[in-house]
Length: 588
Picture 1: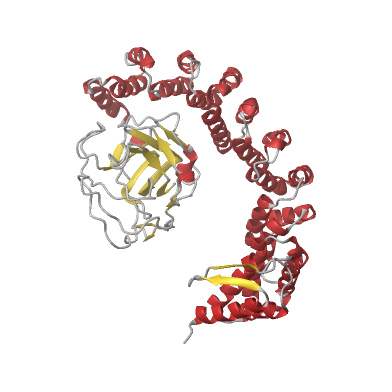
Picture 2: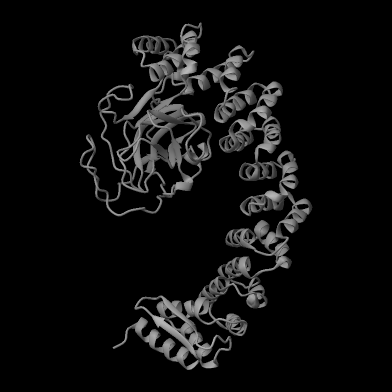
């Protein structure tokens, strides 16, 4: 007896042979074939056989029919016959056929596909719109732009995909024309489309929108510049930073400049220095971080000059950046800072000197104890959660997990202090109702001023899937990332994904909470540095194997604004990675 696939194989093989097509079935759902005589004419019996497969109630049979349409029956005439079936099929099959026609890539299907854009079923409309990405023409750009702006969620996504892929000549020119004429919502969408199309040739048209009156347009333009700009656009991005109207816009502009500095390094420095001369105190802090990212001979002199800045916050940032450099040339300057009149600067300098020169930690411990005495008495630095006035109603926090990148969780046998994997899904974590991920989209800093790969916002962008393209990589050694929640919050849980593409064990994972950006006073909620290699104290927690579930850490309702996460490489290599960090809590 033939099974479903075997039955389909027999039907298609017989019909194709009668029509002059050689097909080979390898026992799976994969077929190969060609026209025996190289002709594009198709026998009506073959078309009807494939239609019969599409109308079959069995999903596997329909999939085989769709594969024939994608790959095995060439020619314009066949395309037109297949496209003509669209109005007569049920919606589920229409969606599949539209996808197959899109994959087929023959523009002969375009008229029939355009008619399906007005279908009464959203899924069918979205499939038709998406298919126009390979079948459409220049004339379809306005329609796709309209759908990308004002369609349903599925239609918007499909239209964006189609506009990104549309191969017609002059598409970017039409998009720019629509960009100038459109509403703010449309301008924001089209700027993102141009970035996705890698439309560097229209950069001069994109630049003015970074100063647009509409915040969504400004954000989209800065996002496009982040992807498309080169060193010649550094002045424009510095101007966008200086003209930012709120903290979120300033963060986006800083990210764009950091990305530019990662790619072009010292070529960006002249424009950055010119910007420092005219920027306000808040923007000078951001520009100092970008100067440190760019590196080069002017980095240390620039940071030293701003130790005399009239704004205390800028002086503090210059110290932080000097302390972040792994350059022996800064040691003498750090030694002077360690004797300065600022307790903050002394502590930061001592920490850096220990890392750079191996200086004993005795004085640092004394200074940190002094900081705890001074700052630990303030209500703003008391990290313990206040007693609730009434019992809180608890509910499981909502966690959306990425897809597993591997099967099983093998424990590296030579790695000490590693807990045995649970072997089953993690139980729900209960927290007060209203608890949410406070870290999403929040600014991130790192101890490494110039990460080896990735960008800082990868840590809080919501992208958790295992991918080299969504991974922040810091230099070897004990390094940290730090999330600014924006406000003092009550934190109940922290969920960390390092690089979960394989079963790695990250070393010296330490998680701290503080109200101070330099962690002069802090609370440690997790520490698996069992031998104190990182110098932050002997940890009592176990190491663990990275999986798609991430590591969930109970924060015990501590309060603070900043979360700092340390690591010191992993058992495979000495690199420090972060895919995503979520901080679950509430803000008063």
